[in-house]
Length: 233
Image (cartoon, rainbow, N blue to C red; front, top):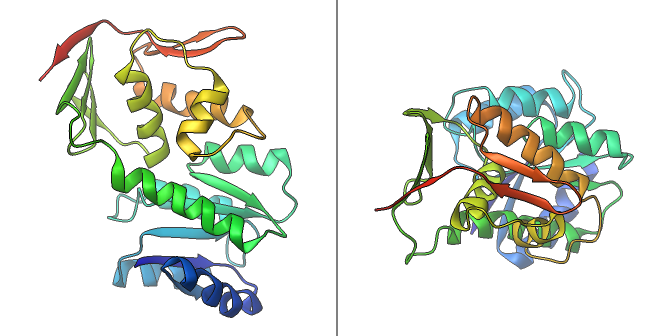
């Protein structure tokens, strides 16, 4: 059973949502303040965080930024953000700060469950057992067993979504993947909206892979990995 932590100041949301998500083998615990969430994360293990954008003490975007920069064991846990308005600005900011997915309020619980299943499925089933242990390129190495990425010998910290995007490109270097293809594979469902999200993820990934110029943009086509391969172990 996957354990979820909900950080939302709407106390009425937690009970009905916990009951609904239990149908999908999720165990939901809820807190209403960021300080409570940090204490709970330090005490227990959770598989994913559902994070509201509007909170007391600090907003959800700042909490996400601090989470990703914390250096703690929960630094890379999947984060699904809830945005009150569903504005493009909120979605962009959330993705730029390291959220793995987003859902505007009000939301359908079934969609929330589906998105959580997709995020957790990526962690559980990638890479495939038959995948090579290492993918090596000029200046870049991926250990697909330990999910470790190194740039010129230095470990680079990626979110789960950033890693999956890089792995997708690295498995077929030189092949151009469209934004819709990338969204379909990352989310495990048809890409309906917001292909702009891929641009944001690529931008984040590029910054973390600097000084390498690893990801190439082909205008009106998509993205590809542009590093020479050194072979796989």
